Image (cartoon, rainbow, N blue to C red; front, side, top):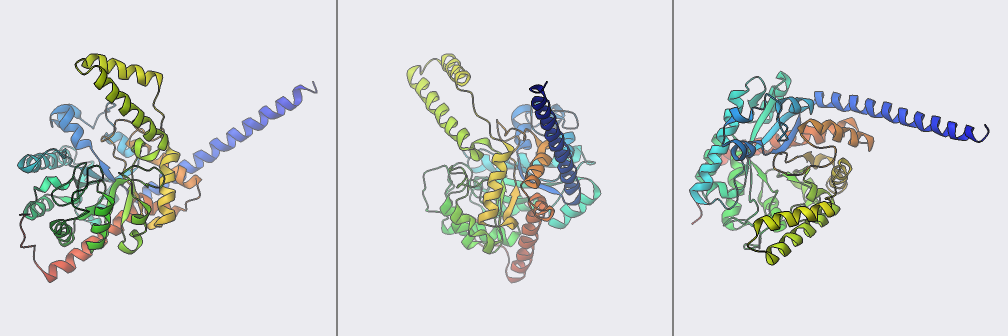
Length: 415
């Protein structure tokens, strides 16, 4: 009996600790959900429009997000469960689209967003300004903003840029995965050393329009050039911190250090390969195995597919986690300050997700993690949405000032 007693006490102690943790987690979740009701959670990047294009040939009836859609990350019920108050919908087109093909495809993607709002008017409403977002949030709807992903979409034309703005686009990512004729991408061989003179003109015209300059996907030189040229705060709609995971798509510390003066914001993304070094390392190994199989059996596609599946089974992919995501938020807060952090999940633009952040319903779990790490309610509200609202208001104010000083640029296109 005397030997059994310590075990019983240990079990009781473990049960007490587990109960306290569950109680504490429940209290934190209640606190998180309350914060989501106080301010709009504004996500910087969701690729649902591309999922509609790729999966159902742009037919929203065949991917009806009023009903459960388990094959994608986004539907209305999960957006509401996640406390999403505002969403920048990416009107992405691949960077190998060129010229009028890119322009037309981007117009079609913008059309999907407008169709979505028309189909679900009780849930979504177009927001063109920060004030629109605040009003729509109070009405109980989800503010819908349009973000262009890649400067190739304007086909080197400032006139096209202005017309996209008229259609509702409120940010443009200067590049995607490849260089444009006027800006270097993070994942292409540098050609320009950052922005060309025409690229600087694009940034200035976006300032004039009140359109946010998005620096996700661009090279560090392009980041620095754009921040130096821009009169308005910049954004990174879906990027993380390079010091935490050294991949080209993340933001280096020297650029983070420029944000307090510029006023810009990094909207931390949930892409596992950008978050966790162990996932990045696994991705490198998978790419090497894929290349090896291609060299070994170049004409046997089925054999290569079987080979890579066998390799994945023998070497399972590691998972990124909510903690990995919060580590990037911690680092950006440390280097740039809490006023320069936001969220940009990249849901439906990624094929794998962090553990605990599987879809758009999971944002409160990340809020809980931040609260557990000691973030104040006010700081959490900044990260959820107040920071990007501040950035939008600043860009709108600078646009109003510039429009009083001059008209649109006389340079219509890059020669």
